[in-house]
Image (tube, rainbow, N blue to C red; front, side, top):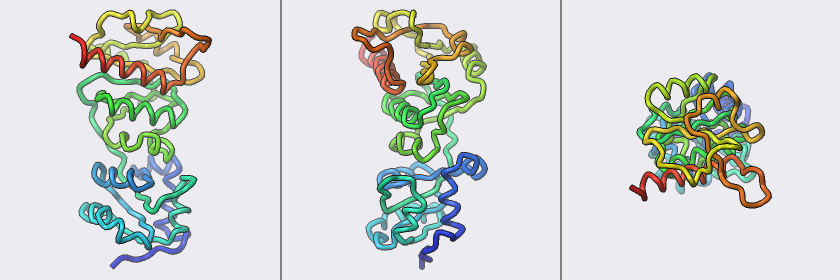
Length: 260
């Protein structure tokens, strides 16, 4: 038998709401996931701690409940206003869960490094693109948005659950370590080489995406082995960080998979 939660002052409800705060996510090792699609993906990929389901939709979500119960998660039917209280979405769906933040090892393949990318939507979109292109993971420097924030989680559309992330307070030092392991470091620069006029890139590489406002920092720029620019034929001087990242990631994908 399930115990239905009806009060926003219940400790389980307050704990779920508190995962909006970065310090709580850090101390508990948990993140919040919202919505049908994302919760199903989380239940398949992550260790779920607690699941809230609208009490009127419990039968509809029987498969999700079973997935969570099978791994020992706490499952609670809740009233609709509890879902609203625990969610940051403008139009909350019927399920919310908390799950262990994944600790995945970097995989084979190109990496992306984010140098102060502050917008959670940009960070999430870049993570999703890396997942789609089969990249080996993402390095995130100081000043980047927290990918495990509710907005960051939503922006990845589940890719966060599969994409290895390494967070560091000294991205330049980490890049120098990776160079010692044989990685090339690719950065964008206004006076760099035309990205489409390049020679074939090394197999082991890290593509650096700079912040929305200042671009790549000086310390990170000094680690570069390759400096490129995307050609601009019109009047725009630059592109949105996630748009530029998508273009660069998929042209690297094309080179690796469609050319010899």
